[in-house]
Length: 254
Image (tube, rainbow, N blue to C red; front, top):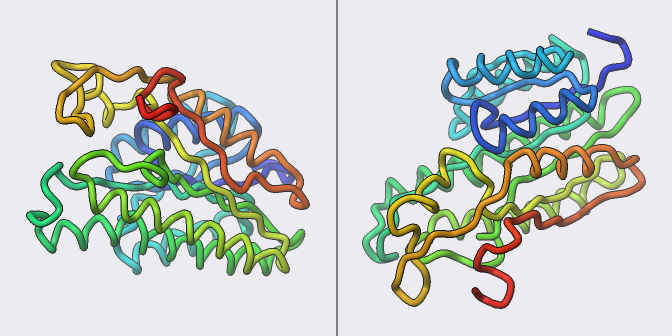
């Protein structure tokens, strides 16, 4: 590892947006810690990070549980001694269904991953960033268009993404004194395995009850956006950024 290299940690780094962001950060000169539940996709992402000329560290982690998160950040400290960027990306949804039918266990699982897990990762990142020399760092949370406008039958996902907005604001406020910036990127229709349903068959359910194919954008565009947020000096911050497929249903409600 170069003594000058900055260290980034990406959760949910094995596929999709997380992988795209990890590669973009590597191309921008960061060494990258890749966390996620499945080792095989993480290793594939690590190979892409290495191919970009950066060092990759794979740490299989289930962010819905506290102990694996604590172990992840301890591994970061022992391996690199510092952390410059945390991209809180890992997240899940629940099957689409009426709000009143959602099983309690599914609600709990989404909240544990999408909200509590991000809170715990944020706590541990702050502890490293406020104590390191030079002090400070940047935390970037993956919000979603669902942090602004819900899709039908997505109460757990939508609720947690709205909550991330509050966590982003509170982290930004409370951590100014430590030269830690916190911002949120709200992503709409990035082309990943999770959004394949948007372009297959009849597409996805719309608020008026019909289904339609929705445009998507390259996930690499999200990677470039995160790199821009991460590239700013610590006296500047992108508090919120929306990056979305230009023709997706959102602006103008359609």
